[in-house]
Image 1 (cartoon, helix red, strand yellow):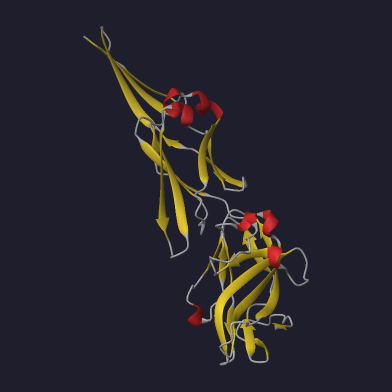
Image 2 (image 1 turned 135 degrees about the horizontal axis):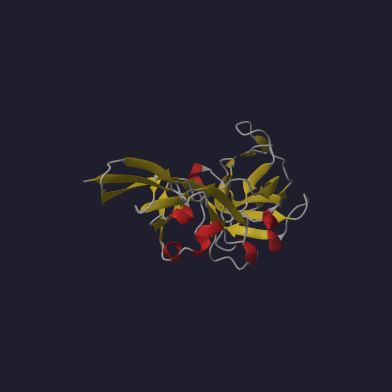
Length: 287
């Protein structure tokens, strides 16, 4: 038997029908493209109903979804195919059905994920194998892109090795983003820039989220002073976000001392500033 659809209420105030209840939020879900989103959900069933499997659907309208709209099924042996664009991107936050947690995580969120989502719980009625499916609620999700990467700059001095760090927005995705460094201005043609060393690493923040970093190690030259560098993040759906920063180098003081043999003794001090070098020149005349 199939029970009528119940629209969701505020999280913590479940909507119920004949002992079947669900708790979610009424508010529209938004998620950043390329990142991940958790659709929170909890359910309750009457004592005579034994839950066996959970199914999630994604529809193009708020009508009841069909078998062709399945995006997640806890039964790995089901003969009902999943929508190809969701393969490997949907998982339960808690796989233990006894906890009655139907929340799912969708990774690598993309524009096409926008739409209406429904949830069903399948089980047995009084132990009979011909149980029924209960349709709980509809949910709309709108992906967007907001966060930019973070670029960390150390103190930069001409001739001293330095490492820049670019941190991508936190992901709960199985697909690491692409991170690219791009120089702007005069530094684009600097041979030391072209020979810079890059490295990539990631760290786990929670059980479902990771943070990805890229480092750029190079030796600054005068060409880098007042130049720009861009860190670009490319997600699995080709969505990109970037951050550009200006480089300001600490000046390196170079002292040049000239001694001349002559009748008079005098000292001349001058400072020249080509790019970021400071030259201090001392001229001595002595007998």
